[in-house]
Length: 304
Ligand SMILES: [Zn+2]
Image (cartoon, rainbow, N blue to C red; front, side, top):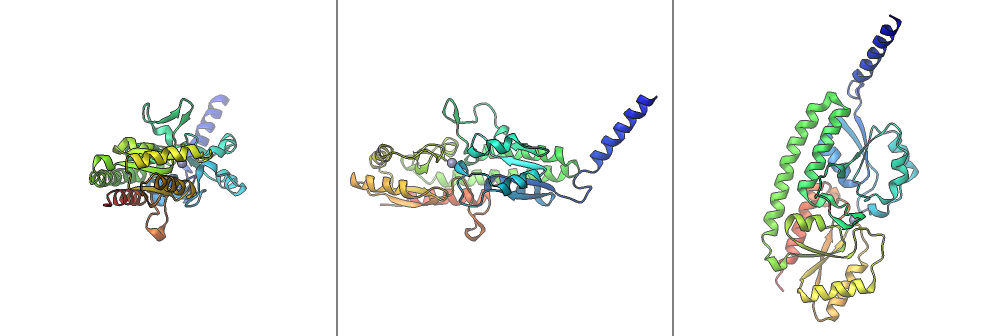
């Protein structure tokens, strides 16, 4: 009998715990996201039911971002931490090992076998957001997890997901429509670091970069020379700097190509590992991706 009472008490306690979810307390789900893309996805799916803090600002390079003490405090106070994963946040190892009471969502965990591109056996490419179909999978996983953590708002998350997936399909159509303006030999994208492999695979663009998938390794003179040779031989009209990477390596490629007798312009700055901001109307993933594609197509379709 005593045992029965204990069990009943335990069940009652569990029920009361479930009942006082975030929305019951009139509180929103507290979400911390590492990158601007992850933060934007959390807002897109969570709407008013979530409160999102993004740790890295606009234009910050996530590969070498060192979490601060204030970041650790924000994570400790949050219900959910969202990271991109695949080692994009190279310096977050310690932080991820010491999570207490904060649910971790790794966006890349939504991907399936064959989705992930590998630079070599041990090095997955983390720039998954540049394939809209993969970002849609991350959105679905996020909505499911939000609903599990905050059941009272499950319907809201599901509704917002449906709307967002439609927006993503429009984005995908825009990207394909714009790239169709380029003749096949013009579909060559040269950038500072290798952030566009998923973009290249998804949308049929040949992609080359001075640096590998991480920005932490220095580009060598040989890398720059080899890329300049390629730019000259393919007669690439424009190459691109990136908003979160110093411009110097791409400028060196331009100079090296010119010394080979091929004039190439800097087509502008692409957003690679961070979204843009409201002052340039690129504060969301969708707006950032559109701006990139418009910049790429406009620069590569310029007549010489
Ligand atoms: Zn990167």
